[in-house]
Length: 268
Image (cartoon, rainbow, N blue to C red; front, side, top):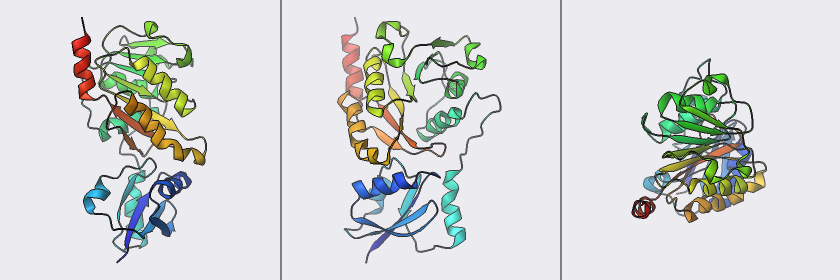
């Protein structure tokens, strides 16, 4: 018996999700769809529940086996994942607050004043505002203007420099544990620059990188984006779609433990 799977995407990203499924899951063919709720018929071997749970999609918020209920109520229940569970504070400089807050929740991070961050593409400060409220020192890198709510925080440092012109020497010498990046650059260039600068930090635990899709055709490059992180020692990188994303997705690239241990040995 053929298996049917359902998918839910962010409003406006249906074409990106359809292209992702077409490229990387060729045994799935389109079936019933309504708005941002899509179903596919599996013409190949049926997936087990464990396999489905371990799927990674850059442009699906939710997916699973379709139980056959295509009523309006059932579809609306599935579409509820489109709504962010995070409230945007009035004082937040931008909706980028939601994206980093959702990532924080998705990957079960814990607030810790001893954890320091660097954020590339920080202006005007939505994500910075969240990070300053939950972690320690933060360096924001962006030639754009930052909101005073961030600039006035004693734990914040702003480098008004394009990432392409930034050297490792200009970055803070304190330990940095995480990097967040949301750059308006070609994805390959953005990843290359972030990885280049990240190599300064031996204690780095991971990178949260927002990848913007300029063209639907660029979906085919997603494996290359992930491989760039893996080649730099970020094994088990995860791609994920968050409710507040637009035409973009997140790669969370944790630093492999064996690379961290090696760094300890290299430390004078």
